[in-house]
Image 1: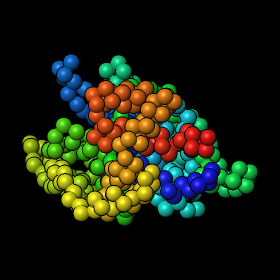
Image 2 (image 1 turned 45 degrees about the horizontal axis):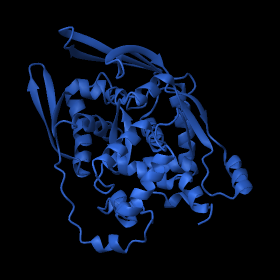
Image 3 (image 1 turned 90 degrees about the vertical axis):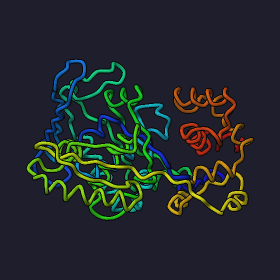
Length: 392
């Protein structure tokens, strides 16, 4: 392989991370608008104060670029996944546009690269103002904050990329970067993030009019953490979280929500949804589909796979877990050796290393370990550090 490593051969991340404050509030309206400001208010019960309080978010777009659009949600989630892939080591994240497109399920071509640039313009130009609505996980309190998500974006041009490839002969080029601001980076470091199934996210994203289903998937995935059954106030969910127009009637909100819920049912994420009236308001209930064990007769394929081979993520769409297949193909003994090398080189974040060491201390192998431990090892294997070790 030498130094020429095709990005197409890399395993597409099966799991990403989602910042939990940005799940509760909509990152811009779900429909196109000429307005430059969106204000959302949540009325919630405060257990300490023993009364209802209001948590507000005001989102303001730049004059030239306007408010964020639903497509920017996908790009923003891809940015958080890139940061997770880098081990949350630095607020500055380097990447290639090809890599980002593959993470969020876009076809890497000139049209999508242009969409990325427009999206970064809107994200960088957006101001978020939270009034008693931003949860600081480090201090365990809601705060008032006004901030941007990123401070700097560097997107290399096509000519820059061509010159770099001619200079070093490498196919894989990470010449783009962005820098998170202190507020959002602190939330990452405080652990106010959740794991998101990116394979399911990409599956839901396939097709038209998927803006509401994608936002619904993220909020449901957060609420399903404790139970497979959850409920919302209809108006709070549709307007306060999904970003629907504030003038929608209950029947209009239900029509939009029905389409989004059916999409999640078709993608085998939801089992069912239904409505119930309570007084002057409506509650909408969701039940998550029970996870079924996949019975496969392809264990021979795993045994016959070349050792150390990166399994393509399309296999996930065929009912296979690409990460599990890759781990099984490499073998427990080799995985343990690579894990030791990763720990010795201080690869990844301190939290990840603690999780790995905890598993090792309990005598748990990589194949039986959790997702964080397995993803940590995959990222190390694909990193430049491993390439240099092999060349040496």
